[in-house]
Length: 68
Image 1 (cartoon, rainbow, N blue to C red):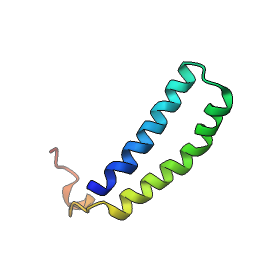
Image 2 (image 1 turned 30 degrees about the vertical axis):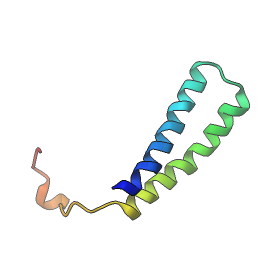
Image 3 (image 1 turned 90 degrees about the horizontal axis):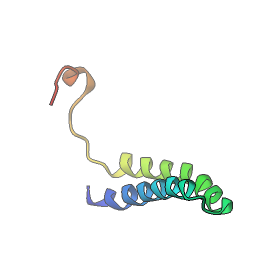
Image 4 (image 1 turned 90 degrees about the vertical axis):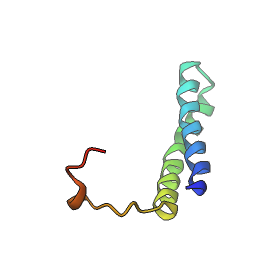
């Protein structure tokens, strides 16, 4: 799980900064650049989570009705 802290933090910060940049009327080229990079960053984050994440061992069929 320690390997996932950096990608999750970086992409979350990038998307949060994008929202702040829109709200405070940052220059358009900066907002457009962040918008252009965000899909690549999200795909990279998902790849890292799927590759380096740990499987919980639970399956949908066996644990569908559990509420914990």
